[in-house]
Amino acid sequence: MASALQRASAIMASGTMVSRILGFVKTALLGIAIGQLSRSADAFANGNILPNTLYMLLAGGMLNAILVPQIVKSVQHADGGKAYLNKVLTLVSVALFAVTALAMLGAPWILQWLTPGWPESQRVLAIAFAYWCIPQIMFYGWYTVLGEALNAKNVFGPFTWAPAIANVVAIAGIVVYIVLFGTSNNPPIENWTPLSIGILGGSATLGIAAQALILIVPWRKAGLSFRPDFKWRGVGLKQTGKTAFWALLTATLMTIGGLVATPIMNMASGAGPATAALQNIWLVFMLPHSVIAVSLVTAYFTRLSELGQTGNMPEFREAYVSAAKQVTMLMLFAATLMFMAAPFVTRVLWPTGTDEGIEAMALVMRVYSIGLASYSLMFTTQRAFFALSDARTPFLFITAQLIALIGGLLIAVNFVEAAHIGVTYAAIWTASTIGQSLLALWMLRRRLGRIGGRGLLAGVVRYVLAAIPTLIVGMLLYGLATSWAPDYGIVLAVVFALAISLVMALVYLAMLALLRVPEVQGIVRRVVRR
Image 1: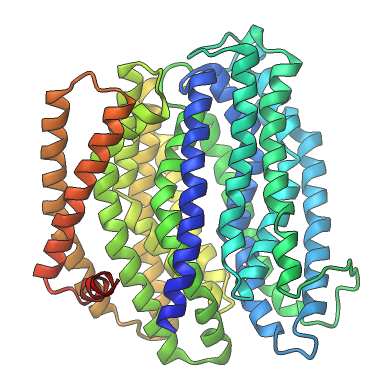
Image 2: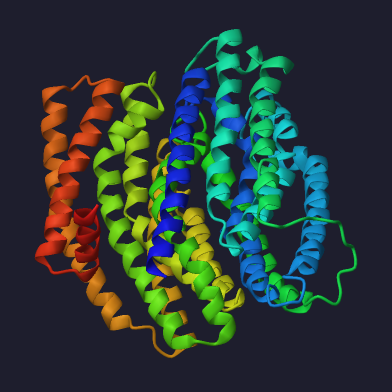
C-alpha cells in the first residue's frame, strides 16, 4: 500500500512540477509583455478572474467532495459505476453551461462591482478580456470532473500532466503577442486593440480547452465512457445531493468572499501589488502545495474514501495522521525556502521590473509563506471530511476563515495606503488560515473521537524546531549572496536560490535526523537504497 501511494504521489508530483515550471515561464513572459503592477495587467487578471475563481471552487472541494467518495462507492454496482458516472457528468455539464451563460450575460455588472474607482477605459478592457476568458468555466469544469473520475479509478497521472498542455498553448499565445505588439512594463490602456485582446484572452481559453479535452484519451483507456443521461434518479444520487448541498453552500460563500475581497485588492491597481501581482504570487505559493501536499493527499484520498465508506475508523485515523505528518514536515521546509527565496523568485517572475516593485512583491510572498504549512494541513483535514462524505463541517471552518478574512480587510482598508493593500491582505489571510487549520483539527477530533493528536503535535513541534535553524542559515546565506552581487539578474537569482536551497535542505534533514523524526528515517532509507 505504501509503495503504491509513493508511486502515485511521484507521478502526480512530476506532472505538477512540469506544469508549474511552465506556469512560471508563462507568468514571466506575461510580466515582460504587460508588466506585473500595471493597470493593463490588472485588467487582464480581472477579466480572467471568474473562470479562475470557479475552478478553484470546483477543484478545491465542490466536485471533489461529491465525486471521489461516491465513485468509489458506486464501483460496487453491477455496472462498475458507469450509470452513476453518466448521470453525474450530465448533471454537471448542464450546470456548467448555465453558469457560463450567466457569467457571460453578467460580466459588465460583475466587473463594475469588482473594480471600484477604476478609470472607465481600464474597466472596459477588463470586460473585453472577460468575454474571451469566461468560456474557460466549461472546460475547467470538465477537466475537474474527468480528472477526479480518473483519480477515483486510481489513474493519477493524466490529471496532473494535462495542465502542462494549457501552459504550452498560453505561452505560445504570449509569444505571438510579444512578436506583434512588443513589450512594456506599463502598456497604455488606449493602445489595446481587438486583435491584441483576442490573442491574450483567446490563447488562455484555448489552453484550458486543450487541458480538458486531452483527458478523453486516458478516460477511454481506463474503460470509462460517457453517454448523456438526463434521468437523474435511481443510481444513488440522493447521497450525492446531500453532500453537494453543503459543497454548493461553501462555493457560494467563497464566491461572496471573493466579491468582497477583490474590489479591495483592486484599489491598489497602479499603486502597488494588486490583483495581477497577488494572483502571480499565489501561483508561487501554490507550487509546493500542489507538488507536495495535493499529490500526497490525493493519493491518500482514495484510500481514505474506501476506509470512510466501509467504516474502518482505526485505519482511517492512522492514514490521516500519516498524511498530516508527512504534509506538515515537508511544507514547513517549503515555507522556509519560500521565505528565503522570495526576492529571487519575484526577480524571475518579472525580469524587467523595478527594484521597488520586485521588493514589494517579495514582501507579499514572504508573508504568505508563513501560512503555507497551515494551509496544507487544513487541506489534508478537509479531504478527511470529504472522504467521510461530510461537506457540512468543512463549510463551517471555511465560513469561520472567510468571516475573519473579510472582517479584517474591511477594518484594515480604512487605515492602509493603497500601495500596502496587497501585503495587508496577505497578512490577514495568513493569520486567518492558521486559525482555520486549528479549528479544522478540533472538528475532526470531535467527529472521530480521537485522531492521535499527541503524536501529531509532537511531530509538528519537532518539524518547527528543525525549521528554525534552517531558516536562519538560509537568511544568512541570502544576505551574503546579495551583498556579494547586489545587482543580480535572472541567472544569478536562479543560481543563488538553488544553491542556498540545497544547503537548507541538508540542514533541515540533519536537524530532523538529530531530533530522531521517524518520517525522515524512512526517507533516508529510501534514498540510500536508490
